[in-house]
Image 1 (cartoon, rainbow over the protein chains, first blue to last red):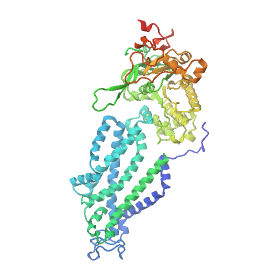
Image 2 (cartoon, chains in turn orange, yellow):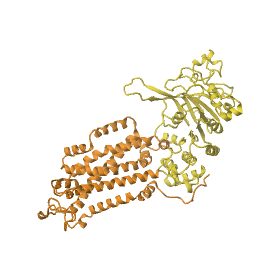
Image 3 (cartoon, chains in turn yellow, brown):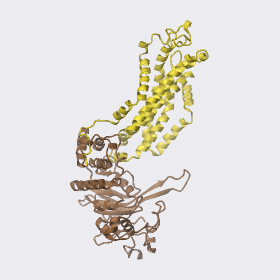
Length: 290
Length: 345
């Protein structure tokens, strides 16, 4: 009965490697990945790419048009090179777009898995407590928290973490509750494994994928929210380059130089679309695999 | 009701050589039903209502009954995945619910279960080799030793480790997965294996292969089996003794060939008469039971089967006691009609 196999060579494949293989065949994954790599690399290596400094302005060259000689994307209201500031701005925007999601992913997955696995009254208590955060629109909650804690990068990162943690907890909890009732969890219990090991070996491996996809789709939301906080003066402070803040400071020029003042927004848009496409491709690869 | 079916476990001989591996004494289990938040009255599903039996070492005990009769609840209670409300459950001389810690871990090791759904009982993210090796590593075996053990066990259940070891459950057929499940249970070198509808989801030819594998394993390693199924033919094929359950109670308990030869309880008769082959051989008419099994929330008084029993009489309003019907004391029936003297006192 066991002669149906194709070859006797042991295959050393893991689930994630299979997912990656499918993922790499997706064209939108390649395009969005390329865009993100360019944005990331330029942000990291900004001092070596840019010919201007991010704070270096010139009173005589304010609000130059896109395509002006010497300034490929023009200059802002203080005569600083736009391209330079957009590249440098990526550093801050990506930092406050990523860090809260990463923190929320770690904290939220832990809380969600444990509470979903334990179940019962404890789970109800945790979930209903976190529902309080759902009562507020996320933008309002972020504004309220960072407003209460005062402006600053650290505070806006904390505020955004608080906003996104309950959402990830909810995804993790529902995944854990589903898997908790699977018979392989019963089998693991019968093997005498402790709950912690069951969560780590049997639960985490089965839920980390969907949670990860959800978290990557939140990165773009978080970046926009973070830029919104800067726009309102609650996040990054001038003259620090940051896309949301740049959008705010260029606001008065919207009638005279509409394209120029929309540039940080376009940058933000492209980056979030790239993140969304990437997480979409990842989700598709995982669903194809299973 | 509480004193029903007492006399099966007469004098549990704990620790002796002939001590039964598993003693179940007046086991009760009910599940609360979630009502609305404000409702005062708590309702329960009565899954097991005083079940008692013994399982000797090396014996294969079959449990049959229609769905909802408490077969799987019984399996989960024995395996320790659920806790019973009342009664005693003694495995290998130890009460399952009294012990904790290391000895509980060892007890679990000696009592393994093969589940019904071969797919959901294997973690889709672990290769089958990893799945089998997981248990032994929990008991302190090194990863390399556990891997070697997994390879041995795979070949013991008829799967080539080179070919299948690194595959995922989704890449195996149902029968192959069930073999993996058996190998995983065997990895603990258990004394007893509970098979909860383990072949129900497989087609007939694969079923036969798995059953033959189980019989082979039994011969090799003197395993004790508790075989739960709704398929009478399968149960007859594998078990030495048989329990017929109805609504959380044992209605008939005895050597399986004797029960198959001449069932005494009206429910067992009806159950067997529904098997085509059985009808042909024994020439019985199919007995069609009227109605559905009663709601396990509100159990009928007296004999639980009287609401559907074609032979129900006035005496059935009294609860029948599970009693021996033969001088050997190894065949027990809970029916007034099987013991005419019972209802008269």
